[in-house]
Image (cartoon, rainbow, N blue to C red; front, side):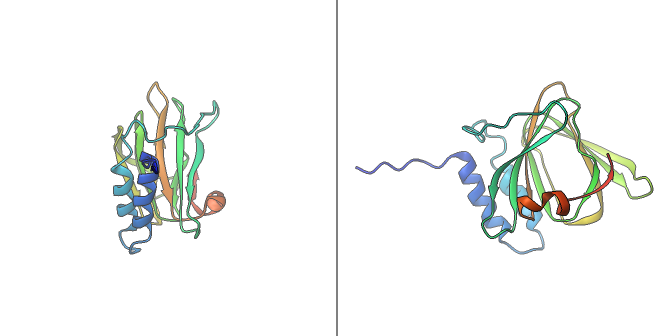
Amino acid sequence: MTYIRPRSALDTMLAELALAARGPAIGRDAAVAAAIGAFVQRPDLLDGRDCPCCPDRYVRHLLHADPAGGYAVVALVWRPGQMSPVHAHRTWCAFGVHQGVLTETYYTPGDPPQPSATRLLAPGGTGHGPADPAGIHRLANLSCRTAISIHCYGVPFDRFGDEVNEVFAA
């Protein structure tokens, strides 16, 4: 008798995400966000994955790198008080909150960019966007417990440093 191990929640999400990421360029970010959103609330999503936090800054943990180099998926671990810089994206992106609560602040372009709106993202909350220098935002963990979010960016992981964020303020 052959035993077939069922796919984990993460493997299933990554398979759905791969289909969405290979879809039409227009709407790709929304399709990937939908794929993340369908699984991100599952408590077993990161079973077997070690995703420690860092006391100084949020940390990215690679979950999957597309073999063709079209995208990479990471888990971001946020301790209370940690936040991204104020930034826009140089590539399409999509994300969902797995654990905890994040605050997303949107900014109006300017020198410096000015906050214009905020929203709270609880587990299952998603966001997405195309590469857009005017799509300025910041994610922050303003709660009192650790948060984890799942992000997909349209560049290989080894190019995240140069090709993901256009930083406006720390």
